[in-house]
View 1 (cartoon, rainbow, N blue to C red):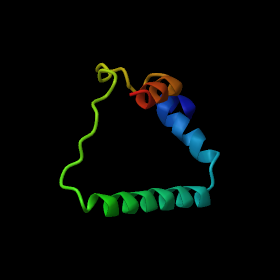
View 2 (view 1 turned 180 degrees about the vertical axis):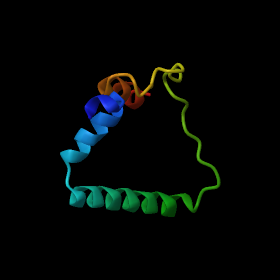
View 3 (view 1 turned 120 degrees about the vertical axis):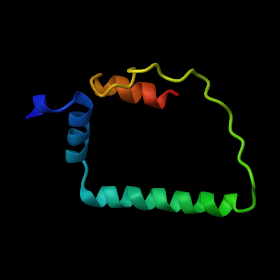
View 4 (view 1 turned 90 degrees about the horizontal axis):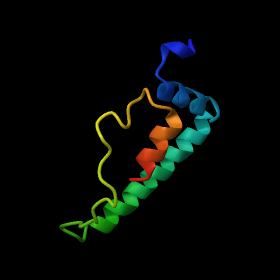
Length: 79
């Protein structure tokens, strides 16, 4: 079955198998709490200015799901 999936998709399946449903719910709750906190903070501002990325965007195909999962994650998180 593994060869029927792109490597990154299979990596996500393995990741999901290592985590429980309750840990997923807890993570979503933490994300929701953070989003609500940011929303409350941003109510007093009209504009949010953020710095540009320190690196150029990835080239077309650089984050292809055909690449090894570690390569995709490293590149996506280093931007």
